Image (cartoon, rainbow, N blue to C red; front, side):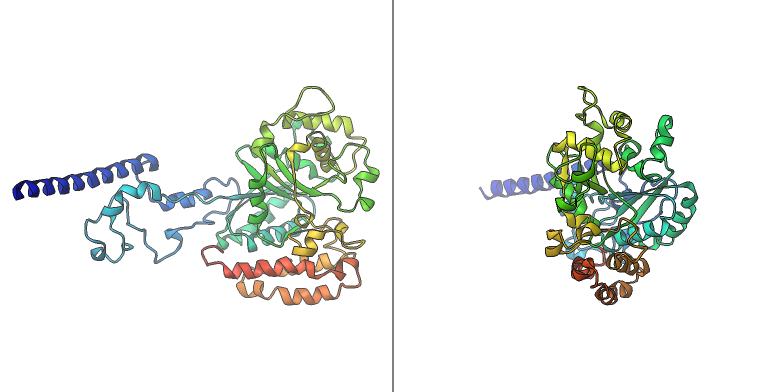
Length: 440
């Protein structure tokens, strides 16, 4: 009887070992099939750098073992397995016995790092303003950034030189594009409102491989991570394709509800200086309109809109966007004014309650207020970030001098509430240094 029992135990042990070996081989074959020949796992992490086009920053944003010297791959090459107990593994293997985990390796693949796509259009004397905006995005953001910069040809060399000097940060990539409009109506589009302003209307048609995009004007400053506004994409319902803030919070000083000679969204219209887009949905959607009973796609609706309303619009492409979302209100996600805070929110007294409670998230210095003395509070924030470098000590010491400058602006309505200009900024600085070095 004991002989039979020993035979049974031996058979069970052999079967168990055979099962483990089978799982091991299955895992290896799955890995080779998915990885295209057993490449290094960190290659997936660096994949967000691929492409980039003309002027792209190379070598930016690499994460994982390759980016941190002294940290070895968990099991060296996945084709190597050690059958020793874990306490007998070589010193450069990170304490796991590959035999025991072989069957589960296929579930441990490193996922590609998500990129946040940011677009801006720069013409004329907008280089310095644009660079300050990009700097504010880089300083506080967590995930890697992909910049899409549309600029006049004479600005490309300057953008490339300045951005290449920041390549040591390894947190962003960029591509420079020429200003381009549909050839048959290029002149008409280019002179609409301001030079190049209407370029944003064509981003879904130009950046065909980009799923989602945050467009901002050059006079934008991020006072908290881009990650936070990017996360609003997850709040879109199934019909929403874009997000913007209202043009005004107070109808008594609103422009659209008092002066517009065309349809506009909601009670006071929307401002397109900060526009978050799911461009895949925009390209697919058929839009209701007042020109035909047939719904039109994005590429087909723009020129008919311009032809119908060009004598009635004042703010160019923003007016056209208001007309589109007037007829398709279900397609717009409206975020609060603190995501697009402009002089209108304080010039006649504070009227953005969300900013009063939580601070300003994104500052929009339209009407040239960064460059004159009409709104010194806006100018103080702009100059602080323009003069700030990427060194840790410089960023840490940003707040106190800025607060002193803002205190000098209390003779203006915006200056009287100067604390909302630094409330969120102070939190962003604290959070930056609370994050681990890998996240910075």
